[in-house]
Length: 358
Image (cartoon, rainbow, N blue to C red; front, side, top):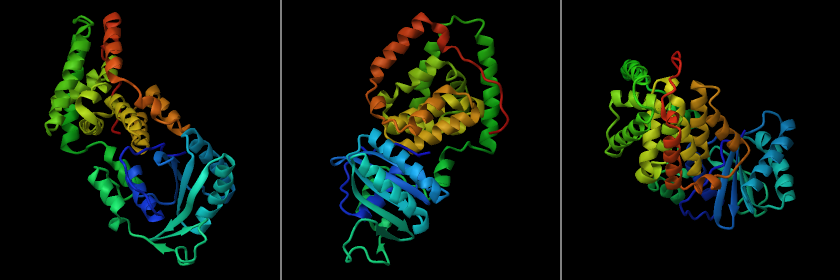
């Protein structure tokens, strides 16, 4: 299964293979290993980046190559740059299959290279001055492309495992504090549900989400009692959905920090709503690796959470994020608000069963 589609909205000049190698970790969020990375271009515009684990067996390479070519075509690729990370024995079989599958689908291959250690080899370059049998040395750390990515705010973790840990739940005293506050917040909701008017929940939910976002925008952690109440409120579907639309008001950077903090700090059974909102915003921004990670985090808490399954289905099918990018959050907010007036119980919390530590 691929890690993305992924895309990059920042203008970066990629002139030679070393530049393409240098940008990949900042598009994925981590330095790949034993991987195939395919970059799809339409003219000068990067349309998407797809990452696969290399097949365990050369017998699986043709099917993997066909699948990859199909995803590239779905991302409207006219030109493709292919990078394999690993030994020749690991990379060459799938590159052979990709050459046939990609060119057969009418796409032009800019280059096909293999990276191992601090050197790369091209499968199609015939110039002996640039592609010797010993490979061509490259240095990501000294690349102007990597420097530009860092200045643009992109981060590349050392490996996929380190990247995955960025969404791991907090532990220790903070976990216990959140657990205690969540029990109190749940009890508060249970006492209110039979007594307040159903319209209370949409008003309270939108007010409280903004209050918590304001903490993050000001550079403060969300106080534990407010965080726990937020987790309870987000179990109301209309609150989860209206909270997503605040991205336009608070911006990408604040929204990313907000949903990451909430996903990591909430008690496990309250995580899915926050995690899928993070996943959808990441997908919308072209960050397919984070979208996958967040959707999987939601499913760890609730294996049946439909929104998370929908996001993973879209990622696995190679659906480009363009349709999500075109969502007008202001219009969506008006639709959700109107729905809350017709069906106010859609904002009422749906309290989950407590889970064991996750």
